[in-house]
Every structure is written in structure tokens, then in C-alpha cells.
Length: 198
Image (cartoon, rainbow, N blue to C red; front, side):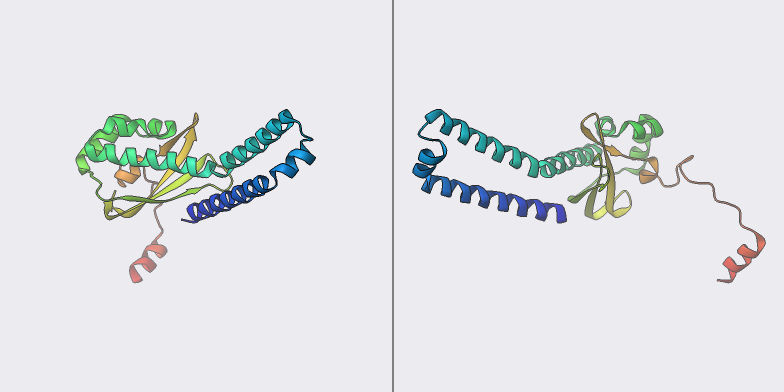
């Protein structure tokens, strides 16, 4: 929400600045042509071209977060739609390389078929970028129905080869999957006694 409102505020401010500069140039066009461009047509063309290029570059810069956010939303939406449709191969292709190495396709397909996972009425309500590494983000998905046993699902994203991928582990689908959980350390007698007591 914060990124979206900040971005909308930035675009609004940029639009107002463009309107202001355009109005000033239009009103003072004769003075600018006489005093800045010295009655030289090619100077005027070059000057206005540079001004337009600077404005376009700035627009490209301030809308970069919006473009990255839309790519993440598209990836997450595609993943959840593929899982719902039972197209597990396509859903699996949207995972990161690290995720694919840790969670092979057969296990992914079997876990999803076994749990009969379907997503209904979900919304991707926020994308938060890592403050220190812009190649990492979290997409926050919520639904009135369960998403892998949760009302809110935080899908970690990573940028690989210029594309956003989902960093996904088997514990999201199957928390009790073999080899996924940490082995629980055996506690001593005194600790067990206090645990039973409380």
C-alpha cells in the first residue's frame, strides 16, 4: 500500500510539474525563442528535444517501481491460477532455480494433488521490496479462503536473469514433509518436568 500511494503521489507531482513547465514555455514561447534560442530554429528544436528527453527519462525513473510491481503481480497471479487449474508443470516453471533444486517437480505435483489445492478469491494486496537488495521482494496475498492453510500468504520473490521468480519451499504446501523440518533437540529431564508443569 505504501509503495503504491507513494508512486501515485510521485506521478501526480511529476504530471503537475510537466503541466507547469509546459504552460510557462507556451506563455513565454516568444521570449524564449528570441532570448534563449536567439531566433535560431535548430537551437529551438534541439532545446525542446533535450527538455522532452529529460522529462521522459525522469518519468521512466519514477515509474520503475510500478513496472517491477506489475511484473511480480503478474508472476504470482499466474502461479496461483496455474495451481488452481491443475497445471502444476506451468506453476513449477515459475519457481526460482534454488526452489527447483530443493523441491523437485514430482514432489511438487504429488503434494498439490494430494492436498487438492485450489485458490479462490485471492488478492495480491501489496508487494514489498527488500530495502538492501532490490532483487528480492515479498508478495502479500490474502483470501477469505485458505491459501496453503493460511489466510495470508507471503510469497518471497527473487529476480533471476532479469525475471521475477517465486522462492518456494515444500514446507509451504506440506509442513511435515520429510527432510524439510529441523530435527527437534531432545530436552533434558528438568526441562521436560517444567514443560509438563506449565
